[in-house]
Image (tube, rainbow, N blue to C red; front, side, top):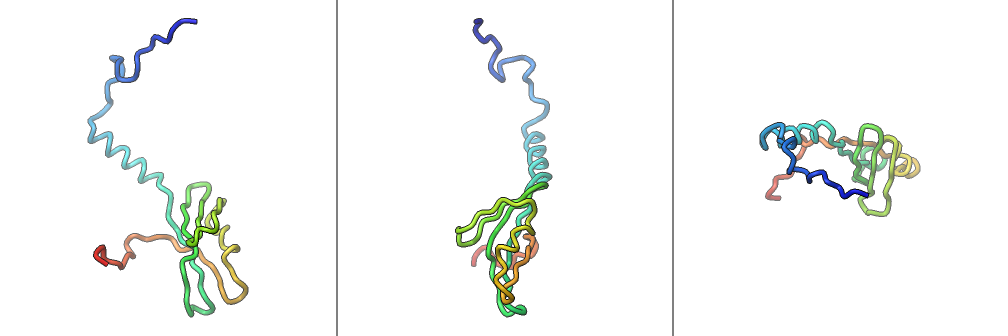
Length: 112
């Protein structure tokens, strides 16, 4: 068996970068932004808007989602975020819904 003779990455004259570091970093940021999962919460509503709480946080990808309950007792792999809701309904008094994270809705100051 012959020894592997290909040069390591970066040692070949054909391994020249296709763009500057700044262009490469901007391209990576764009790809990540285009493919980032959406963040959602499962919100439990008590009775007719008497009270509520965030019961879990999830990440929604194009073809599946993951959810972790806020008390860390439950992890779910889902086809879609709404598939988690049945696990968070409690009789007629507690209903669950998906609420999508909106960074523009943040009301807490960084100093709080």
